[in-house]
Image 1 (cartoon, protein in one colour):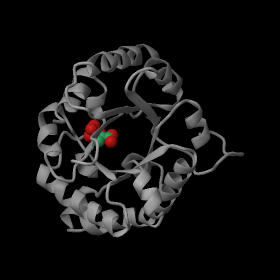
Image 2 (tube, helix red, strand yellow):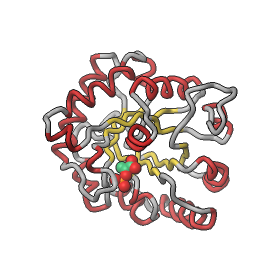
Image 3 (tube, protein in one colour):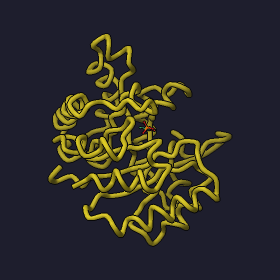
Length: 249
Ligand code: PEP
């Protein structure tokens, strides 16, 4: 991970309340002072709590972002949130193509790449999520599926690729308590790294996501091509989020 600063990012999904978030955000803030390593820390919160995150984290080392963004700049798109709106609330990050959005909201890889391009244009850093299902893996199609998800993103070109983040999240490991082994994760990260390099991007960070916990994080982070984590369940408690951050040496 030498030249790539580790990134530890929480994805709260559709969890939280003003009261619970206040405790969680304060807990994360307070805990960062005790971290010895220097990972970059971020939380991706539900849209309605962005203002709260901004208030709570404004003068901290923790940055914040959203979990989705409209592909459109503005207009008659009821219920959508634009990249410019996210930037208005100080967002640094936005998740694009989380597997739950691909599976539950029909987002395809071309749309995900277009969202990433729009996010970049709005001054945000997209975190593009890719990953195979269990049946893909069992059919030996992991490389092909992840490659197909990545292709339209690679087509954005070297400049875009150097400004975004990729998250490899095997669907079978998300929220299941069953993390990929460090070797399984590294194998796919190395493939993604090679694809990025072929497209002129050699320093893009690649996060692993899927049941990352304080007790499995260090072994994952020890892999050459794992540059940090995208964390769901364990990001909802300050102790476990910080425990994962502490595993970055
Ligand atoms: C996620 O939501 O991106 C995720 C990886 O969830 P979990 O850590 O709960 O598996």
